[in-house]
Length: 273
Image 1 (cartoon, rainbow, N blue to C red):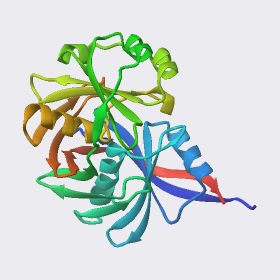
Image 2 (image 1 turned 45 degrees about the vertical axis):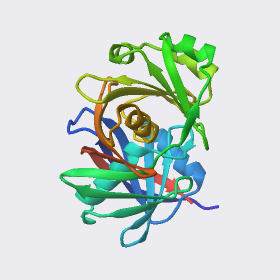
Image 3 (image 1 turned 180 degrees about the vertical axis):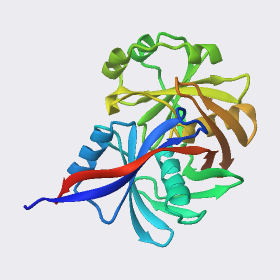
């Protein structure tokens, strides 16, 4: 099969922050049509960010959307979805939405500009209790108070720690964690200047620590909503880069709102089939 060289536009966007060097960076690439999966994965590996979002426009406000880490496609990524909406609104003049993102594993996700914030609408995760793995607890090096996991697709597990300081000061053994479990590890606790804090580790996906994780808040939001008896919550993900999210429950959906900043834009020059 003959290869041709294409100039593929991309943007790097920091999501859930108003800082040039904060939040969670994601690459966003709007394609004319889908490339082979191997090339999508190669592009994501080259970007070497926690996720790259690929979009193909289907109609005026509808886009097919997929997310790749440097080593694998994932079923859901919130920060790269927010980044994609930011690119449509602020870089491509596509309006303020709502935009409808058609995904392979999570149905339709909507995004729009509202109250000077980008907001994305995601499915809330229904959870059940989870038995804490001894090897994972050892890798965390912290006391785990409780744990829950999604009933339908336990690709992420939530571990509640004693307090905010335990989350902030956590220094897990990433290698041991990767050997202990084959799911993302989310740690959380109630907070002083927000309703809750969290961090997220996914070494089995090629992401030792994710700076700000929208998908994790599909579980964190209903978890803390039930604990605190409120439907609107403020959240801090206290990674080194840090990020802020406004979270709310709406039936079986979670709405996440935040800011985003374009960090870079350009063209990938690459062979395509």
